[in-house]
Image (cartoon, rainbow, N blue to C red):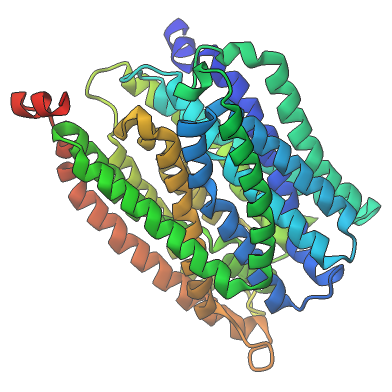
Length: 496
C-alpha cells in the first residue's frame, strides 16, 4: 500500500502548475462552449459563417503558441511570459463581456484571447518539464495528471457557462471565463515561491526592460493584426501556413545541427508530431461530424433523463478525469521496474488504435438503430470512452514526449510546435468533416442521415486503423533511435 501511494506522489511545483492550468482552461472552454451560438444569436451570422469564423479563431489560438514558447525560452522567461499571457487573456474575456452587438470589439476580444493564449499555453507545460530530472519515472504520470487539469476545467465550465448564458445573458457568461484567469493569477501570486528554483534562463536574470517593451508593443500590434485577420480569413490561413513552415524549418535546422543520440531523439519527436496531426484530425470530429450525428441520430436521453445532445461532448472530459489517475498510476508503477514501461512510440500507436475503435463502433451501432433511425445514447458513451483513452495516450503524453526527447533549451518552442499540430489539424479536419455533411433539403430524416454518418465513421475508423498498425510496425525502429547512445566521436563533436 505504501509503495502504491508513493508512485502517485508528485513534486510540490506540480500542484501549483496543475491548478494554474485548470483555471486557465476553465476560462477558455467556457468561451468555446457558447462562442458559435453567440455568433448566430447575438451577431446574426448564419451557421456556415459562424463555423468558419470559429474555425479560424481556433486555428489562430493554437497557431500562435510557438511564439509564446520562444518568448518564454529566450526573451522574458517561462514564468513572466505565462503571467503576461494570463493578463492578456483576462482582458480578452472582459472585452467579450462588453462587446454586445459590436462585431469590431468582438474581433478585438477574440484577437486578445488568441494572442494571450499564444503567450500562455506553452509555458506552464514547459515549466513542468523543467521541474523533473531526466529519467524521473514520475514524468509521464505528472503530464497525464496535468492533462487531467485541462479536462477538469473544461468539464466544469462547459456545464456552468451555458447555464449562466441561458439565465443571465452573454456578458455574465463571458465574465465567468475571466474569473478563471483571475483565479489562475491569484494562485500563482500566492504560491510562486514553489517554482522559484525552476524556469528558463531569462527567469533567473533581472527583467530586460528593453525586451519587455518590445514584447508589449508586439502584443498590441499582434492583437490588431489578429483582429484584422479574423475579418479576412484567407489572409489568416496564409499567415498560419507561414508560421507553421517557419516552425518546421527551425526544428529541422536544430535536428541537422544536433549530433548522435540527440539528433536521433529529435527526429523521433518530429515523426511523433506528424503522427499526432493524423490523430488530431480524427479527434476534431467531436465538435463537428460526431456532434451532428448525436443531434440527428442519437436518442436525446441517458439513464432515462432528457439531455441536450450537444452535451454528449462533455463525456470526453468526463472519461479523461476518470482514466487519467489510472494511467498515471500505471505509468509510475511500470517506471519503478526497469524496462517494464511502454515506450512513447508504443503509447502513440495504442492511442491511434483506440481512436480507430471509437469510430468503428459507430457503424456497428447503426445496425442496432431503431425503426426511426435513432441509435441508443449508450453507444456514444462507449465511443467517447475509446476516443478519450486514445487522447490520453497521444495528446495527453505529447508534452511529456517533448520533455523527454528534445533538449531543454528548446522545450518552450517545441511545446509551442506541438500545439501547432492542433492548428494544422483543425484546418484539415474541417475539410474532412465536410464528407459527412448532409444537405437538409435532400436528406431530412434520421433514416436517411444514418447511412451517411455510418459510412463516414467506418471510413475514418479504417484510416485510423491503418495508420495505427503502421505505427505499431515502426515503433521498434523509433525505440532504437530513442535508446541510441553517442559514440566517442559524436560526444566530442557535441562539445565543439
